[in-house]
Image (cartoon, rainbow, N blue to C red):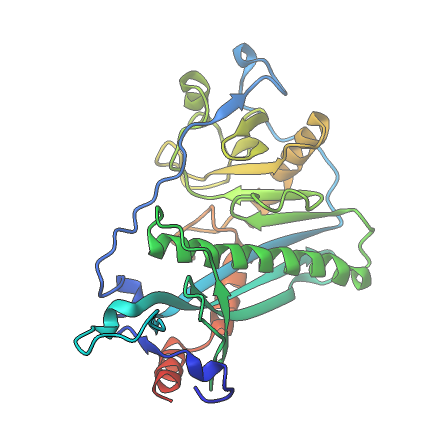
Length: 343
């Protein structure tokens, strides 16, 4: 890399292993989030009165905006660190290299509105270098520039996990950007201001400030509700939901479970968890829960089309395909990084 004098001071090497198989340097990448939750279940119904709630008649939103993002690690690289002092003749320079990630990520929004149907509304893509190396600089390649993102080196955290979290934060920021841009772009769609619904694929953490927003969680690793209320989730029929409850882990939000239409099978087949901001009034959260029962079943996917059906909603699946296409050819990107490393 000789584009600038500053860039020439950073030397790096590309790890030969395919990043989808982990690093050639063995690292434990297991991380488990906090599984305890503070739950307040008596917002909509008292716990003794909890029962499946059937869909109600509510007005359609002016438009539904589906937001999603994708990420892909193109390569793990090793950035040489300048020695603090002149190294001994026998010094192993590999010991002075820091692992980093070169990744591509993209986010976009699909708009479903009466006038134009489902269409791609906003999309943004980025390439980034994620590292704790303080001498890191942008990596220009023939396939684009990987912008340096230097994060604090937490010695108590696994490095691979730390860098992956930094990448996820950047992706989250990009999702917020495309969501804000989408609402600006709605101005020409004949949609009344404040009448749209925003559905974010994934938790709403860090995005609860977005108005009229829902977080859609497709997979379940933790039982947040007390056992007697948790058991009711598997009793939901298609289109039914649980009462709204307030949930707090490292952050607070309103939440409820909803079963999407699907082929009968496993007890939790078709179950999704929805989230909205904790600081909105309870009646507003209940109204969003009712709206989710009207909107989301319309977009549930089919088993013969999507292995993640019905939870992977049709607009989200289409958006994911387009976003991954926008990331570029991984083989060409890997080659571009190797050429840049050898420059």
